[in-house]
Length: 511
Image 1: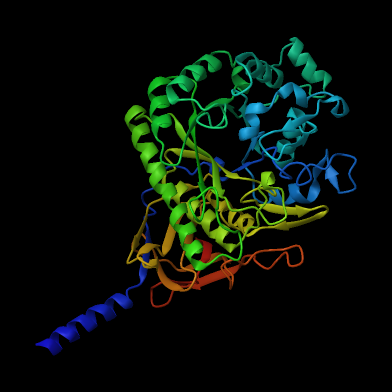
Image 2 (image 1 turned 180 degrees about the vertical axis):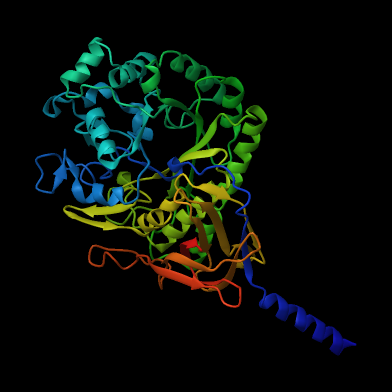
């Protein structure tokens, strides 16, 4: 009897051990479109994120167009950057737009009290920012100053940018070099009003928001979509109050969440040289994004069942301790394979919630936090996060498809675990079906069977991003240590099985 029991248990364990992860894509049930703005970027006046990193000025020996580095702009164009948020962030609520117009040598010099207490010469202002957006072919998201600004200041900025009239402000824009109005795609009323934007309560901000938007007037063809400053982490009060109290002029409510390995602001963890426990905690903490989005969606669905208002995750990404020897206020950190995996996990979450999540903005584009690009004077390198964004380009404006993951493994450390495989699928604008797969386990590869509507699939063709070390990263001495490689998988015996390496990201077309 005991032998039979042991044999039965042995067979059961053996069966579990050989159960493959199965990813089934239901191509017959198209879901909401994944708005291209989900792949938005964020450029704040912070450290060398703009100055030096992107803007060198027209007189620089570094090749540039209208002051913007050609190498950086060229690399960003490869990402098909759909949208850029500017000028902040916390910087936005101390930024006065009139400081950034007119001759650059006559603009006032201020102190950036949020980030390093360095001087801000206002060389990059409204005109320069629109030059960058036009070079990238990107839409613009401008963050208004509610913290130290006024209703009048925001109203006049909108008029300056969008008025085709002969008003004094429109004529001032023309005098400064721009004849036609600009299209302002999005305009936010303040930033992080619960914190650096003014330490407010949601009800107070809701009244201020309605007051401000009453006076944000622009011609219909130039009028921006207006964004309300929302909550962060597990705070849903902002989304609840705003979707209940504000009935008009609100395209979206913002939401912020940063992935911190330790979960502690005072000691976040290093960007490289970290133990596996911090690889795991990073995966665990970044996957909380799904929980936070679901919680905000629940209150929004109750107050806004027609889904008129989007949830805009306009600040997200990893936040580590700054690199040793750098200014703590500049938030400069190295970027490793771990960051690419984090980015891909978040993309898959955003796709799953495409009905509400219509914009996200990673923090930030260059030299700050989870950056796409790092620079050192005239040198430039692409980070693993850059490569993740490049691999996911086919998902911009693609139609999401339901994905079912069965027999998923667990990546465990101690008594805690996270799902080993994350998956997402969509029908691209080119008509092709794309699938994204992520393996969170840094030690174990896994086999994944890919099916389309139960009918199987013939082959996958795409790219794979992985490396030997958990903290593999690119340096100026070795700028291509981490980069994608070609990936192919062919069906055998009517079954398409993908060998998904440890700590990897795959994006491929299904044929």
